[in-house]
Amino acid sequence: MSYLLKPLKNGKLPLKNRLVMPPMATAKCEEDGKPSKSLFDYYDEKSRGGYISLIIVEHSYISQQGKARDRQLSVADDSLIDSLKELAGIIHKNGTKAVMQINHSGSAAKYEVTGMDAVAPSAVSNPRHNGPLPKELTLKEIKAIIEEFRAAAYRVKMAGFDGVEIHSAHGYFLNQFLSPLANKRTDEYGGNIHGRIKIHLEVIKAVREAVGEDFPIFLRLGASDYMEGGTSIEDSRIAAMEFEESGVDIIDISGGFCGYIGRGTDEQGYFSELSEAIKKVVSVPVILTGGVTEAQAAEKLLADGKADLIGVGRAILNDSDWAKKAVESLKL
Image (cartoon, rainbow, N blue to C red; front, side, top):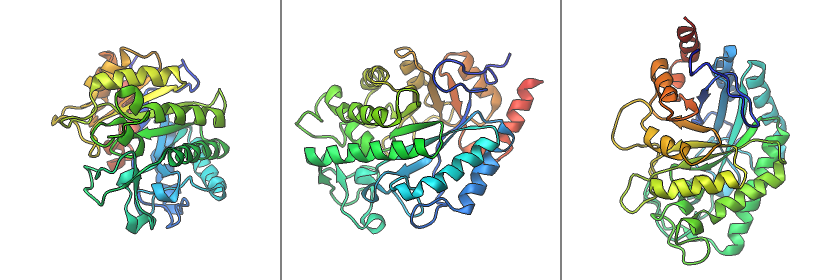
């Protein structure tokens, strides 16, 4: 049997195959972050036929201060739960599971979008944006943002999604704590890898308390910054083991502090060195995304033990029938 078509049965989220559509920002929401008809139609089209086992819905902001861009999806208020429920329902009726990614932008947020000054672990300009210096968070302010993650995760569960993904990649808030490039703190939230992931463990704990034991928690991990002095794979192996121990059910691997960039290779599955290294030290499923455009490439990555699940982003973005064609080609 095909590796890509093999069901995933272990864990809290059984999946009919190993194909995942990763989170990709669409900017299709209303100005207040509410899902629009355009967004509903988009996810309806991508999930149609149920060929993709799981869609991870694009990053949604947990607070106004954490908003990344105009028309980004919001999970910052209880008033959104009903419309988010409609979004989950659209994906479900097509036979696909739906997980929602929650995020805070930290120093990647812009004043012209949020109307607020950006905050971050340290007063360090975000290497991705080179914007104004963010305000360094106090311990009290860190606790408040952890509570925003907790509330957002609860809304995701109330909206009927199958799980929640905590975003710590691509230079956003939690990735800023993870990375020595952005985290220059000298208190318990800085220093070595254990200090830099203290907030992650506290967010995971808060989210678990909010959603209960049986609700799947994913964490998207920027496992290497690919920049001098940045997060290394050795750091991320330690982090991944801690995340699993603290209750994360699936680890979703990405890389590149300054956005979705790899190590200068265009091979399919270009973060596979990261996912393979993480997979060796955790027992929870690992997702690999990065430049996969052909079903046979996905098949080989799974056969070679690089990951347990394969995310296919741009190819599905560009062709809504990609998954149908991939699944049917592997059945032959």
